[in-house]
Image (cartoon, rainbow, N blue to C red):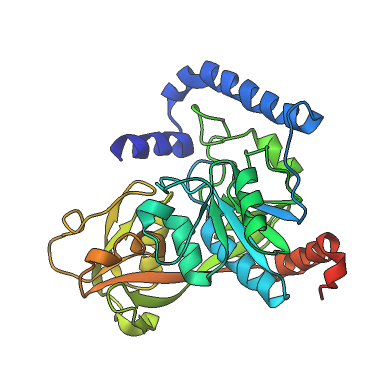
Length: 336
């Protein structure tokens, strides 16, 4: 974790030693650019699904709020009367076979933390497979759907897509704007010009070339009992242990500070595996974690462990734009 922290700090705050990695960055850029060019030219085959596919991804390493946005899209599309399915790589998952249909009763080890969270929150049909095109085919074979959401997969060009939504952390931006390993970018900055929409997580207002969205805390949920409490359940100034195994833990800690609590931060690596021993902190205080971490901790949770439920709230301009895209992609549905 310390090495990852130092590398992230170098990418976003700058460090002269990164200049030594520029030859490797140049090689990386050539590889990813040629890979994309092969698919765009038709030299490499892409699978085109019989229903629209919307990819929600990023071009940076680390968290940008993809899972909350996926949850918002599921709810919004369902309110339009659409039958929605989701495919995901299932990072860190160990299913019995691939592709694998995730069910709410599965373990995070089996299904992956983010896919399990999505299914437990929404009940949406969800298939995991590093080969997203194979996941889409398996999902469509299992039941009729109108629309597929691809959780991540921006760089998975074997799956053709009808809409690309790119998420960027508004506070961190694109760092030094260099590609791996000299910077945090999975693809060059120019890739954003080809995306259908760019959304800035944490931005208060839309900006040139992008829409704003925020993650709004909605409730505290007890891991053991499932009881749901309002945000004023903890008084202002409440000290608590804060656990975050996500791409940008500091964003979670800042959210708790914004609720006027006093978090003792415990950052973990993204997709970290937890145990009761690893989360036994001193002094004895309530513990609050992300919902993504909670799906891995319910089996051994203490009575005073909670997760903070958050909801993605995109700007009105994005909602209007997205509804127009639904009309374009699904004209026969006569979306409003």
